[in-house]
Every structure is written in structure tokens, then in C-alpha cells.
Length: 124
Image 1 (cartoon, helix red, strand yellow):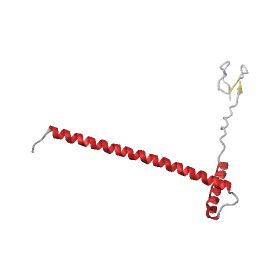
Image 2 (cartoon, helix red, strand yellow):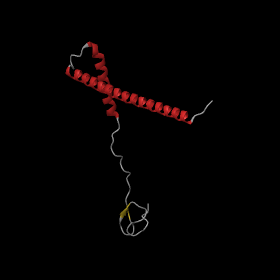
Image 3 (tube, rainbow, N blue to C red):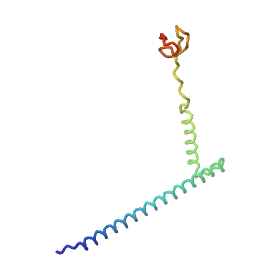
């Protein structure tokens, strides 16, 4: 069995070219999948807009075929409003109160253990 460097090199090049082609195909498949998903999102958004317009336009005259769906949406909106109302407010927490003390020596006010003016202990 003859072993040829040229044959091995050609075989390696063929394998590299095959791998490159498969990589290009896979990349193209991913691009197509992303494009399809983007278009599907656009369709879903447009359907949602159509539905919102329909419900707002024909609020009192909703056909029986979609009445249950509209009622379900309205129930969900009410539940969201209820949940939003039950959220705790985002007010800043009150800072802990510090009791300022008056220095028994110089009369300066401070909340530290020692007077910032004269250095005397502030006491309890």
C-alpha cells in the first residue's frame, strides 16, 4: 500500500472545504431562522394591534364568537390592576433617627460619642 503526501494533503483540503461548506450552510440556516422568528413576532404584534383596535372599536357590540376571549382579556387587565395596586410603594426607607446630644462641656450638638468641638465624651 503506497502512502502519498500529495494524496493526504488533497484529502485534508477536501475535508476542510467540506467543513467550511457545512459551516456556511449552518450559518445560513441560523440567519433564516432568525429572520423567520422576527417576521413571526411582527405578525403577532400586528394581530395584537388588530385585536386591541377591534375590542376598542366595538366595545359594546362584541360578537359571541370572541366574547369569551374579550372577557378573559378584561379579567386579566383587572387582575393586573389589582396586583399593581397591591405592590408596596417605592418610597425611600426612613433614615434611622439619630439622637443628637449636647456636649456637657461646650454645648455643641452631635450624634457621636465624642464632641467634635472639644473632644469631651458626649455621655449617654
